[in-house]
Image (cartoon, rainbow, N blue to C red):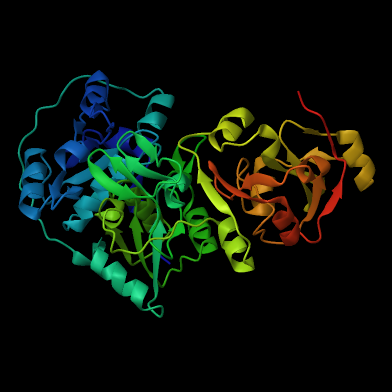
Length: 455
């Protein structure tokens, strides 16, 4: 596999080349309230111009919003921005690279390969104490010749053909946050809009959308391609390992999508850095797919898939927003706090873990747990350990659908309730089921007194 370091430039390189005559630096910051240009005016990298993907580079067609401009209109915008056929473009943003990655994809789609993204973006540039300016540069128009590359552009028709032929060597990558992937929310310019409880559709700024994902798509949220310490991209090896771990093979044609083709551009860029050769963006993304009732969707979680396989009845409840307390969770689920079951993972030794199920405000009793397990040393598993051991993030842990068998202890507080709710494998989504069915699935679970009454 061939990596592409030429597509990613470092802040030091850019600082040394700011005065190069053939270079055009583009500030691609944007905001849901269209205030990206105001951010640019307040301070930007010297010589940079501003292009907002939402305001300058997109249009609406047949009700589908934020599609890339047709060739002639795109060429006119580039020419007016001083980007010609020989111009080297470097695009940057902040911690959200989506605007820069979108410009990178758009230029490459229209045949312009001399484009790179600034690693670490403006965030790293500022952290290094580099110069900012408020001066708006004068722009000399250039000539941009669009030469579309259809292979970089995916459509709903192509995806339907992939879904109808399981033998096709293709991967669908969902670049949205996981709450959108599992169907509890949809994209808006201001962030995730959660569906009302028990509803399948929601009005997203005048566009009626379903929650869910394209069948067979894997979840690779675009933000997870970055190191949150300095907002640089993960190494090509790490990006490749992340994709491979989710079944995205280098020999596949890989199609990324998101809400409107913006974070999918970042996901596609990361796969490009990882050396994946055959990449395409589904530009219309969920804006089209989620609106059309004739197109198939999935909205299951790892836990519901496990319960379905076992024939266990349950009900999924999607919270309308972030859950921040036990009381809020119970209230929105129309339950008492004692019906809300938490799954807590403890580390006994290296690579040896145990999960304790405990209900409501009850707290795990460390002395009781140590005595039962015969362990003098016992620690709560760290977030990375929880993810590695269960496949779930903290706040979404469930005893169902684990990648490997794990010892499960059920506190008596759980057994006192007829109906309980428990983690679904995804944050802000819960599974409601009978306690007796919980125990049917967890036949090897050990019941006992592992908790003390909480406040």
